[in-house]
Image (cartoon, rainbow, N blue to C red):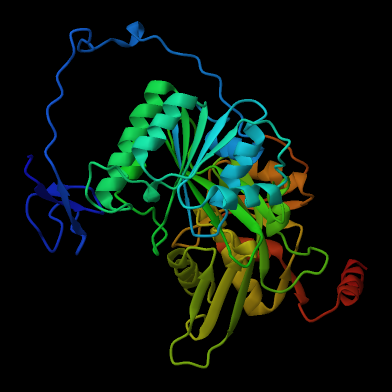
Length: 472
């Protein structure tokens, strides 16, 4: 009988050790080692019909031209880089109840009219999945190409895959599967690692596209070893606010396309619906502007999004003022506040300061700095910023406005949504998008060029009369 061996595996970096440590020697994480018991495996010998694969040069390698498979969702195809690649592994993570299973069942609903799909529901019964399918409009009269397998044993799942050989297979979820040769419980580091490795080899060999659901920890990262993200071809994160209806699908890793691409959905009674005009979700009412608001154009991958930023500056009732940022990186927000106080002379050290993006969208790139600075300054002065002006630029510590990437793409999106002016860094605009371009070199220049001289408490009619009087 084979002797059972003990190993200790770090659930952060996946390193193996022969003895227990309180702190992982490789990654330095505390209390991250987990004991794993397994029997030593025998060395595999090659059969007479098999031979070692010799190395090849690049010209000798024949490239298979596989046509991508459309998932049925344009937003998902955008994030994937054009569709599903045959033989690839796609890992989708997200918080519980965010809509991962609903999205994948919707993909299966779109694909059953073209090819067969195997849905491994390891966390639910077949009856529960059917109830969700009926709520989403998948009736019993649909093509008989969607197969449900409520199973957690990986050996049985692999046998079913070999029998059906479906082009698409969905695993919901990888943390629920187990391999009988490993003694640890499902969801452990060793189980997740071995199950994913076996599925990866099977998918590459049989040219089957696997869509895998992954759990996340309380910190928001994918549960299991970090090796899980290295094994798969694509890692997608499903994000969203539980109090909002929209969902964001973000690409973190993609071997077949660009990363940081963004797809936007809306959760409805019949499942997820694609959002055709995502900028409308993150824009306020431009007909009734409020003090302390500014509009920026953020780029998520190759997608520009017009987002309204709201700032509030008020006297503090505490010994130290509060600083709160929602949707904006906190460190950059604190840096902008310091620049406004040092370079512009706004006394913010004794005031509470808040900033938030409309819809709760995370806009952490440096191109939103100028919009944050304008919104904070407008709230301090209680002034209204022109709602048909967008602000694009990075703010340096010296108060200067630096250039940003994909400027033409941002300006094109702003012009398409009806904006009239754009405050940008001093640069050369190659095309005319019908916008009035205002080039500024410092934050002070931007404040002079954009804030209106009227008080925010004046009504729209008073501002109109005031403007006509000045013109006269």
